[in-house]
Image (cartoon, rainbow, N blue to C red; front, side, top):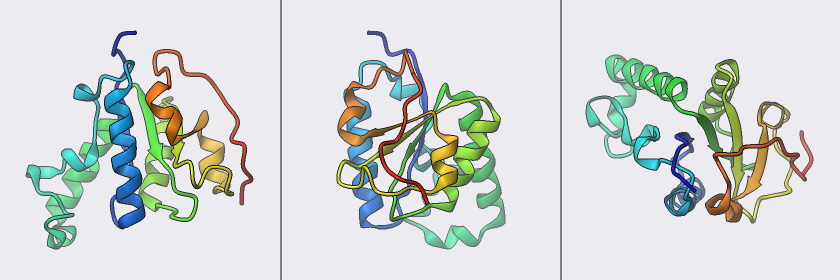
Length: 158
């Protein structure tokens, strides 16, 4: 299979659980033969002027940095083939919710990836409604991004 699809990698990195899921998803994507990760958009790797707020949180108060980073992320969604959201049911992320809604408005295929240990837990109705498919993290490395299909989430919504 050819690496033909790019993804917008929507994932939180603000606490230990989010960081763990972020790293697991990134490793799975590196193994996936259908993802062109080199040309995909990873927000943490594309922050304005290369200033990472996980290393320099003071920039969260810088209007120029915040505006440029936000708009670059919108460009990342627009120019990627697929919106991938690393979703933690117990860690609702308002930023990811916005990214999912924007991706929907742009007609993107939306895939939620849920860590195996959380899969089946209730997820937010709006996140559930916007996604085209929700899979376990363990299935990400083998997911065929060249042939995306609709699928139901096996858990409940709230």
